Image (cartoon, rainbow, N blue to C red; front, side):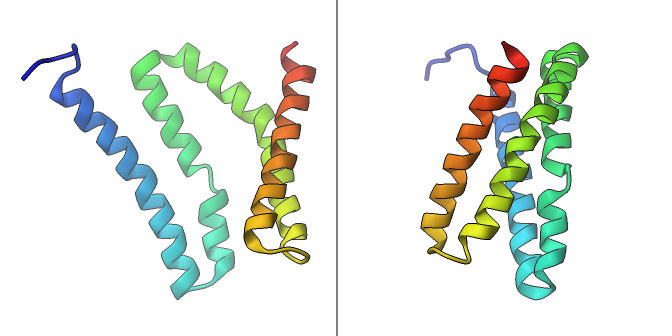
Length: 120
């Protein structure tokens, strides 16, 4: 067996990150199925995933990088809100997959616009 400089702990840490995100997705779907979609929406929109990303980034790269990530997340949350609104509107008129495709296109355009306005 050979090593590329990555320890078993690095692999375990990566698995923990994947499992954490997976638990959130499973939690949202279970809440939607067994309770009410609005409560699933609360969990889906909660800054849980963002907080976990900030936490892991702080441990891995430090507070300064996390601070920059926080600022980027703030600006790029705007296209995400537009994505959600677009998907809601599109689902009234087209299939789910067409709605997702259209909403992602709107999101991508928003990302480009925000990037050009804020970061150039």
